[in-house]
Length: 179
View 1 (tube, rainbow, N blue to C red):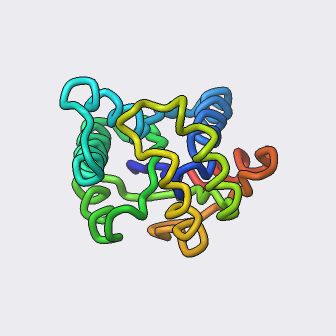
View 2: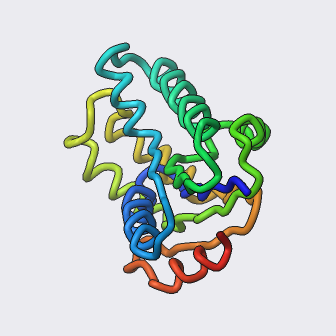
């Protein structure tokens, strides 16, 4: 059965940290886990397509998202993609369509829970060191509001991680039981 783990949460919620820990833990347990991150693809597009206004940024995000699921479509069922992206930027039906097109039969979601205050502070802190194509530090105010209302996509089992604290190793056991 082809499955995928989506690591979901608002920007600056700790998705990249959780994804790296998941890949390492699952690989150590013999699972062929492959990370696919929206920002990695998007930053490659910035280099070749260029940066622009917010509409341009969102367009590159949609293209990156599409590319991730196109890539997963070519994976054998023995690989478990760990997809690191804010999945709430598109309607849930868009995610459902991508999942279906990729042939994913089971989605496990890891929800990165973070307070609005922490998400905004993290975003401001990292804004100066990120690729210039990302939204500026002023996005932190909008992110504060978004973090207060964001929720998991819930296309399958949802495991919540409090990313304001160290990752509970029980997360890795719970995921391994599901895959």
